[in-house]
Image (cartoon, rainbow, N blue to C red; front, side):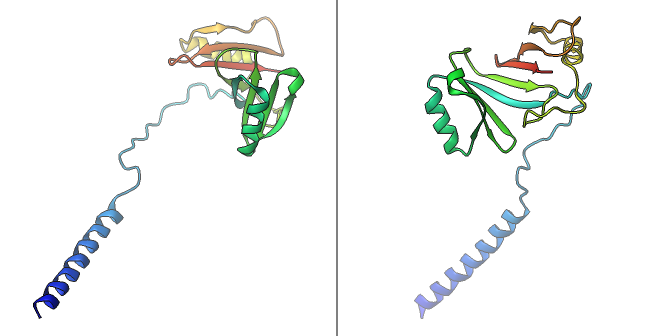
Length: 167
């Protein structure tokens, strides 16, 4: 009789603890400790298609790796020592022996399919906005020209950003 009483008390205690624990978990919101800070977008710059350009040691090994991630060759060629790999809207450029480090790349005037956008911000407008914001550029577009041009800057962590307009 004593064993039955202990067993029943244990079951009741387990039920009560489980009930209160479940209520605690249900009331906890996911990511409630993350603060979302909305900032004002100054200038609403249209930077175009985004990709990351990776400096790779072995273009073929990198191609095989990214194909296993679901990417397909989209542009470039092995004989040119670079490939642009695409998976839906994601673009990864693989470059062998062309530059050191990795580069964040934006292409004003293009979408992620390298199709021309009807409306886009010319690189000179982007450059002017960046300079007016107090950013230091490591290379600049010639403001007296039109069409293709590029500029570069470095973020606070040393990541190189290339803004490269092709048209």
